[in-house]
View 1 (cartoon, rainbow, N blue to C red):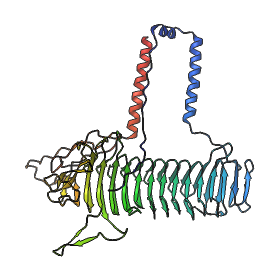
View 2 (cartoon, rainbow, N blue to C red; view 1 turned 90 degrees about the vertical axis):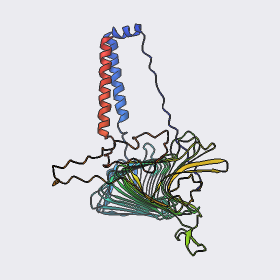
View 3 (cartoon, rainbow, N blue to C red; view 1 turned 180 degrees about the horizontal axis):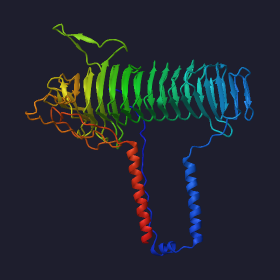
View 4 (cartoon, rainbow, N blue to C red; view 1 turned 60 degrees about the vertical axis):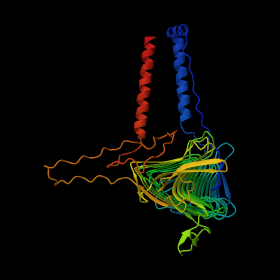
Length: 572
């Protein structure tokens, strides 16, 4: 079994408020107050409204306090540039590059770098482009280029660094290469947007942020690392808007988010060591195209998609291809061992998933085989290699693997799919739920029960297999090593030339079940008790409630509350 992780889980609390209604005497006083009091309240209300609106508006950034181009430093307030026009600074925010080829560019405070043409920044023992905190202004680095233009930054230190936020936008291409550290490093948030491409190659991280990373409506974003992560963030990673992201590492995870990972209407290709994608607080793939690979790490483990103390959710027409090879490996894996915490579940709905886990001893060798007396060969059960696995411990919402209206192909040298829960009394059971789909292979396959007492702790769960009895080992020959679950065929359209004198065939009703409402998690798992799940002839249409509808509902509710308040005041 793979070693358990000890990543802390955030503890969200919601505090309620109680507003006491004023007594009758005070209400009368309010109703008969003087015009002076009314005027004062109007003024105070206007001031409050202005204060709130100012808080909601983005903070205004000051200009750079100084800018350094090459080895020359220029103070704020005076414009500067070279005679050939390859660079110019307005003495405040904006630095323009036009076919620049020179040394480092640095600033204190906010700096906007706008580039056109082919630009090259080369730095030794200093960052290529850097914005650092000034005396009166926090760092902010904004990079934007025209279509067809490029900005190539190379350094032995970080190629592009900000001690605050970094925003990369526009139709130009940014190439960042570090020979010793990170290619792109933001100590605040990092946002990449626009149709231009971003290529980041670092000896340490390719793309790194202490805050959130958002890749929205972008071109192709590529992040490569030698020693550390391809993409690493201490908070959340969001990929959306039709962009394509490719992340890889030669010695570490391709993607690690200490918060959550959400990919919506986007493509992600991750190839790492030990982990392909490791999101500590949940993975959501919504209408996403994802390919993940994980090779054996230094401790023998490999997991393609992994989250700890949260869930993996694949929905709305997503396509996921995940492969992991190691002594202990899984293509999909969730784990939760913190009491009173939710998580440790896998939900797949209206999507296509392929999950394969193989035993690999040397990182690139074949699965070891032994020869029996009949001369036949069979794989040795030397590790635990499961295509899709969800696992929880006592006190935690039991592990659940839910597959709804989806095609799922899973393979593992130990088991194809496995859900298990650990407890002292054996009452907690991991479950596999299949709805509007059926087990196609193996022949006669069904959900079977697993139960084992190991070192005073019960392991109880379910797998896909062919046994009628309860198994006590995932290595049992009745456990399917390969399985396919798929929805029934979509009903064929009626032939327009069909004889109208014949009665029309009745169509099955569409299913209206929703696998997992947005923002909710089941509190009780239900074990599958039949060999085939419920099926329908026509796939049900699914999709989340649109943001516009949600906003409209909220506005309508607010208007109703306001109208009620006015009527109540008039009655008083």
